[in-house]
Image 1 (cartoon, rainbow, N blue to C red):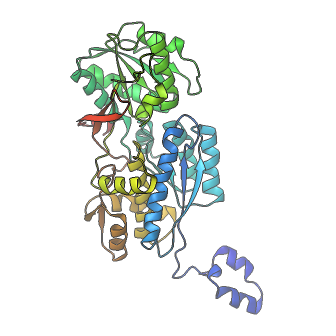
Image 2 (cartoon, helix red, strand yellow; image 1 turned 45 degrees about the vertical axis):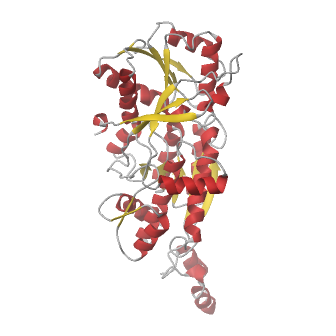
Image 3 (cartoon, rainbow, N blue to C red; image 1 turned 120 degrees about the vertical axis):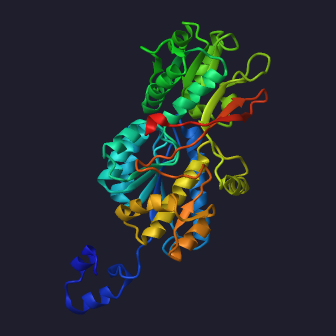
Length: 425
């Protein structure tokens, strides 16, 4: 069958015959070259994560291209910066979907940018796989049929993290909490999941009716920090990203509020290798962030060790918190394309769960998985971030690490919390 463009061109005698013999006017036997997009925050509040996530996606594609590519051809990556801003994210998604005509996009890092991107992806029938957008709102929208099967994520929704934070607080003997959060989908989603989970365990959120919130573009935080600490809670829960979150901690230190009776709990948005350096040191040369405790999705998947070794060999540093999720998101997109035998995203979306979930041969190596798929065999990919089993709403489940900042400024995992996810059913 000739393409519409080819039919328009082939209108005059022998020229049509000659053109039909060229690859440009044929689709039979050549399913096409896979082009995917990455839509990550290279600048803005989440730039601390975005460049490293881009590295992870590119490393996965380079690995696959070295072992034969997808559908017999190298995979091409087109990258856009969403700037951690919804407007920029929407413009970049439009470019990838409507101009570049990619088959799928790895992106939507903050939940706010993912919200701006997903409607454009669905309208253009492009698969969008987020490595880190965790707001529970996506679960509800998927349940309502908004996404038509084009949305997936390899990080668990904050319905689970709210439960993990509540359990962590109770385990530390914390009875009362005040919330200080970035005012966006991420912050508000975590508030809505943490409050009922903490109350179900007997805890009390002192500013439940009016949590201390700050706009994403804030540069000063004196009033919101003072408000969060004013009720003298056992702990303040800070829901933030590194750029603004580090400024919040500096402000709390300058107001003399850190290191006192009120403890500080943080979330995955603050789990950055250099977070202690971003916050800074006190007059004694000690890291201000020492001792903060938080939660983040566990990254102890079956493929993590191999991923970490490849990442360290390539980039000479440790992967960041959502790098394994980015590796897995990219892997699922490529494997699903091979299974679909097509670069048509409307076909690819129906293969995502097939390669991610049982039944099928459990496999951690992406090249091995692709080889099995080419042989017509089913696979059950076991990822770097977890087993990446996806439910009908595009969500993964997961356990959570407990992490802290050590006196030397390093980020260390000190435990784990299992979650039931009852609120996400």
